[in-house]
Length: 78
Image (cartoon, rainbow, N blue to C red):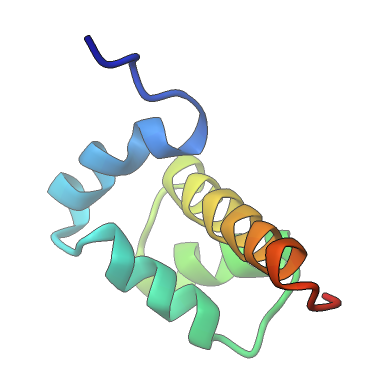
């Protein structure tokens, strides 16, 4: 039996259904943005892509955490 998804990823099914893009596409947009700060990215997703605050926040939080973990595992300074 799999454990229920918790944290930001728990929003992902609703985000994909509501906005019609896979999470990987949203993460690619976030990573391609020249913005780097959490709340700047959230505001950008809200204004430029019409996401609600909770959905934008979940995408940014998860993406930045993934990138931070990746950097930590590769020894890259962020």
